[in-house]
Amino acid sequence: MPSPHRFGGWKLFLVLAALLMGAAGAAYLIGPDAVEGSRRAIRVTARTSFVLFLAAFTASSFASLLPGPFTQALLRERRIVGLSFAFSHLLHAIAIHAFGQLNPEFWPGRSTLTNLPGTLGYVFILLLAVTSHRGLARRMGPTAWRRLHVTGMWVIAAVFTSSYFKRVPMNYWYAVPSALLFTAVVVRLIAGRAQALRRGTRSLLAPNAA
Image (tube, rainbow, N blue to C red; front, top):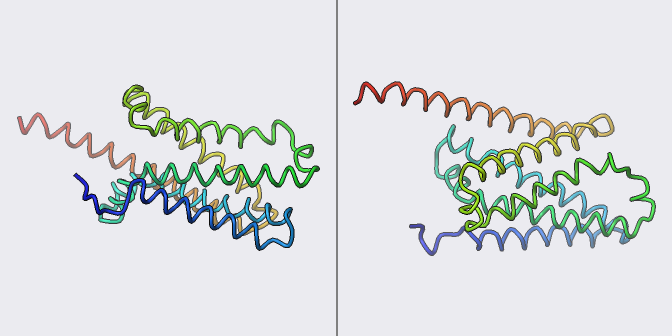
């Protein structure tokens, strides 16, 4: 049983939520006007969402490849980190809505095709957040739950990749998150391969042990 004094769980979520709201609010307030303030809030919440997503996306992989106190703690709190990512992206959606209200040219300049990746990403973020409830996860069963969450994480990763990679020609700084995403994908694939090899080794050793 975890210690009741351990910093984690919903305590961690409340702290992260407060920091996220503070960062978004500060970004909005330092803008010279409401339009620029909301634009800054969009950028800040996009970055906080990206960092939290990477942490949740790679938690189990790093815990498998580099076991230690930090990676085990990250794996233990992966659910809270994922919910914090969903909250950060909720703030991101609010900032986008505010910017669209303040800038009438924003939404007419976007097509259904342009909005499709983001909409798909938000659908999966909502599904993953809702099914993070332990009671609902038990009703789904471990197989269906895992399929949904694995699929959702890869879809969200693809949306982030598309969003950042297509901006690299406009600003080379976008190559940094693109490279981080590529690294995260490689880490996931290596960890998956390593786990499969371990399972294969155990299955080969089991008859000999018997």
